[in-house]
Length: 126
Image 1 (spheres, rainbow, N blue to C red):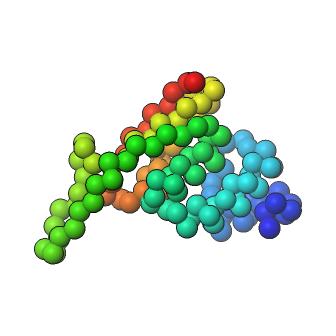
Image 2: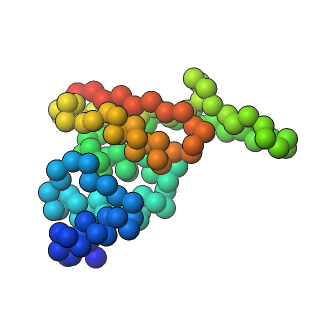
Image 3: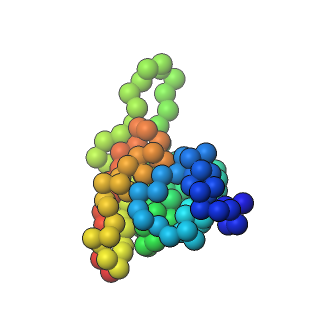
């Protein structure tokens, strides 16, 4: 249980669930992130999964706009859906927007969402 493990064990558990600590988070924050990683993995690709991961990483409010578009084809090797009107927009509303690395959040979102869905990230102050 990451909530009771020593710090070195928490960091080791993080590697098991694919968590990287890009910021100087304190021990309690690390515990919460590792504990939440399993729940996040159960929602990967969904708006809820993206919101959960970005909120956990930024400790800020997260607004997500998803076009909700979907596509399928009976023709093999058909082009994947995507484009400027199809995708996910993640808006992070933080007390201090300079404390949020927009590029890292973009990388996080890219790792969670379906590969063919385009995304944008915006970080703003309250």
